[in-house]
Image (cartoon, rainbow over all chains, first blue to last red):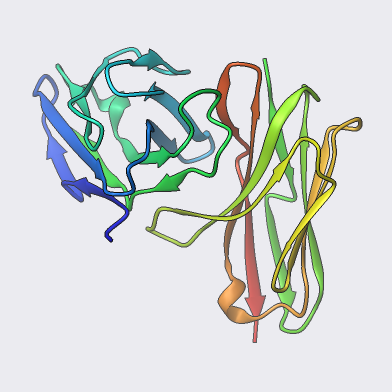
Length: 115
Length: 111
């Protein structure tokens, strides 16, 4: 039981390049989330998926797209990376189908640098 | 808009001391409040979840309390140990808003 896994662990991009961050969970959770963590800003929600087939914007969605590929996997795509997207990205999941009232379980994070 | 504040931003205590971390939130209509621990370079680990109908939750040396009416929660750590050194984050869910996090308290327990 691996919990929430994220790939890659580290990534360096040049401005304008694109990439996809992958996330998978093996806990049969319904809801999945993408956060970014920046010094002095705390954790901020980018996008979330309350259930398979649905996605919604969080606090800071601009410059990102997401895909809920199936119940297990939730990917985050940067179409044209910018230095402002340099951050640590965390994926999380929870059992709740609606209302997101259950404990969230977090992956180890992806450290992204955009030059 | 829900805002979560954690005070202090950093705290250093000697081993064995009991300590309290504080969390406040601006919108008292919350579903639940969660405390997380984050070790350097790692993801978040859930410590305690308090539903809006509850007043406190306990796990081992940790006790979290919730006072919805005043918009406050505290995390009490008894008999602190160097292994407790980490950043502690508070987060709330209210209305249709997913988790809103505070910026955390960085705790150092000195042996």
